[in-house]
Length: 329
Image (tube, rainbow, N blue to C red; front, side, top):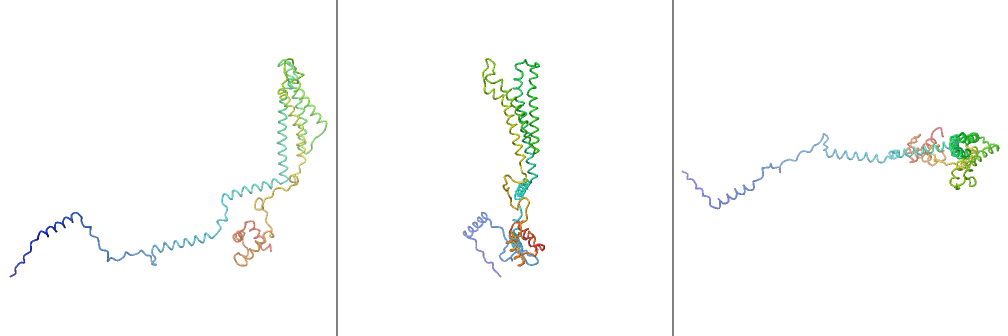
């Protein structure tokens, strides 16, 4: 017969300890249960069939890219290409050189001289017509002699200056045309006729305003006198200057530069390029032959290959290529 073992009653200390545990549990609940990974195996690394990881493939790609970039940076081919700005500047230089060479051509020089001569003759003839038209009013005042306006004498006075001007323009025009054709007309009789017409025009414009020809009560005015003789004076100056100008044009020699001086010269790398001779590029030819012997250049290299190997201009490279050609040997 068994007897039950009596359970001791909890004492006050056990009760207070239990209450403290319950209170602490309510205030700070324990964290949720997490799986224990201390003994778990490491996560597997992603690999391809060859056993290379993603990091290995990425690093291998970076190394390959760096090698390609290093090989391309050594090549100077991009530096040999002309930028748009360089091509634009070369095009302008080429055009300027072509224009200069064209300006040295005898036919072009003759055309330029003829064009300038026509412009000058036209301008002087227009100025002569305007000067004679300016003096028409002064001549009409002299010829009318105080006639009533719109009377026959007053009307016919307007015709005095035009018929003299037309005659003068005929003589001057003939001399101008023959001068443009290289046959200047310097006959003394024609020159005297010109001076006669000009003297009549100047005298009729100036006479009514001279001090001894003024009416009573009028005062002499120098400015008014100069204003009325301005047209005839300009006409006289044009008639004297025009034959001299045309004579100078007729003596031009279009086959030479001015005063026999040598014209401007440009480098052969601009304008119409003149191929350089073998003697001028002899050092480059020797270097090219050494490179051909060493196998760096082929037996018949192109101008582009020569330019890259010798670091020279394209014109020099072409000259070297021509010198090394089989037919040049």
